[in-house]
Length: 439
Image (cartoon, rainbow, N blue to C red; front, side, top):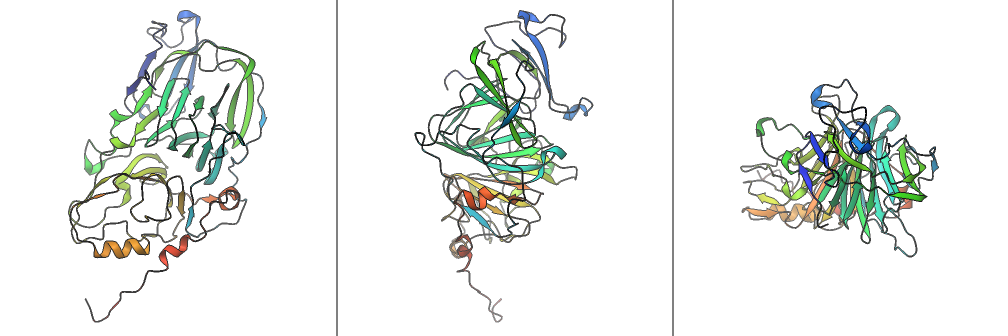
């Protein structure tokens, strides 16, 4: 949207005031006896008070009324949102889904919350350890209602349609080929402009951070300066008919009523914020001699576990780049992995499976389930002339990779009716080229 402004920097200490109220931030302290403009001071903590300084996350919000002014929460029907991983028996097969269907608005109006569908996941929010993968399909904006997630962080990947997201910190416009992260506890509302679809990676108990670069050095992959944070914006709006605040708490939805907009933050400061990132800004690292580097070189964000080098979840992309490796089979190699690999496609054709894997669809290759290029891709790449070539031009595929063994929901396997039961057939034409007399 025209006029939206942002501040840059990942994890920075930011300071922002709505220009309509200059001097709204208290000077020299967080919680004065009387705040400027008669505002209320409210701290939002994203980490324990005693976390080491490098991992301590909090922001101070200066608002017209505090968040505590609401009626009691009541259970709200959660539809296809779940964290129950035992609805159906485990399935170790390679799974692929056709593009998820977006209902037509006149027949079935769905906003961002009512359009959430859990596809797979592991762990559980009460223990503060786990993840969930959701698909969102919606065709109408959230009106006088907002959502906050008590369970964890949402990494949102729009695939079709743009999202105008209003948060307590300000507004963000997030379009396909961009992502945003709404961290635990942050209230937000989503406006859409037609049929809209995308993917969500939810992480319980950890926040996303930039991966360590090691021998790469100080620069590369997703650079901190390219992450954008909204600037303060408030509305002093009464809602006599009732504004609905929805809480996702222990995997369930609850709704509370209040008579004013929650987006009444006039100023804020801190390092615990929502943020967005344009995937085109990713600085690709790749092999320039021979062989195929592991896909970890494409990690944008990671949510670390307590084990060094092992992530609860990584967000990985496969952007346009040059392929120049000599004497090398250039597409992804055949693989069995101790991690779970969920893939989605924002646009274009994924290099290892140009047919069947479509934008708005998905695949899941579970722990130690073999996967790799289909037969057509293998034959083509095995015979290709090895010249410098553009790879994945006009394409953006991504992966949610996790050290957890993810279970698929009943909606994913059955109710959605989008599971491609012929996926395994893409490898059936692979034939033996073995000849003991030929080296």
